[in-house]
Image (cartoon, rainbow, N blue to C red; front, side, top):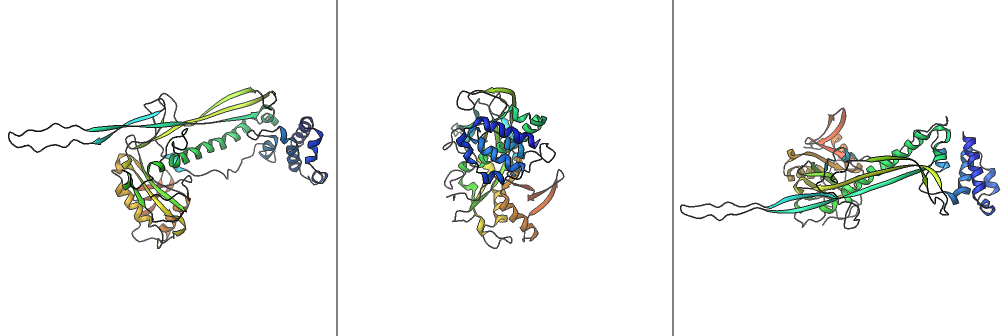
Length: 379
């Protein structure tokens, strides 16, 4: 199989480039190509003028094979852990482009009345808030001849689908915390832009970690629920990640010179947004200076105390499904504090659905790699 792929690459390269392109490979380099993979790499360099960077190549195909010429199990070292997706409640929006919520902004006050005294009628006040959804999309296009090599068409296409799904997961998670429609109108607005000013109405729900530096991170407490905080998708559409196999298609002008190519095409889409219907059910512990943290909480932010404050800041934990979110660095320090048996700590390791889950006063602590360690100071 390797010999066939190599010969195929060489033949295509000879038919695709002029004599001047051959100078890209020196005689010394050709002599040094002892393995089939090195030879294939040289062929890829020669053929590079005709390759498209966004589509898999013969080299990509060869690297995906195991010693038995089958699609290998690829070690996904770029994957991240974003457990917020386990809690992300998705509810269909009431608009074609998002969701509109009505929030009570004023409660009428009653009047103490004396005999023969009058009472003035009063009314409540409301305000409407509209949250938008974003359309996250991608395509995968693989040359049919490449995908059909060795009869591994389905397996090869599946191996390409996995990293695309991971890319969607990472983008959605990053957007949940940091997306901002003011700077990226195509996206939706995440949590950080909504909780980034202490003088705002929701400023009491931003707890101070004490940093004055630039290596900052946050811990979030979110109570997910229909009337608190939840994800949204457009009215009449589908929730979650969608994959549509377009099958074999003819790609026009594939080489920029009017040429055509038969390919397998897959379309991916995820329409999503976020609505904070009641900001009292979100708490941000901001300005945690990562470099100051120690396992016994002697210096830096007192994470245990701040998390206890966060639980008391939320209006009512029973209104939904509460969870803390922090990145790998913070969760490691919390785990080490469990081992160090920090005095008065309420951190524990519980069994939930057969898994060990870190909890704080009964609220799960989730790891989310999308949370940065270089956040700007919240002032």
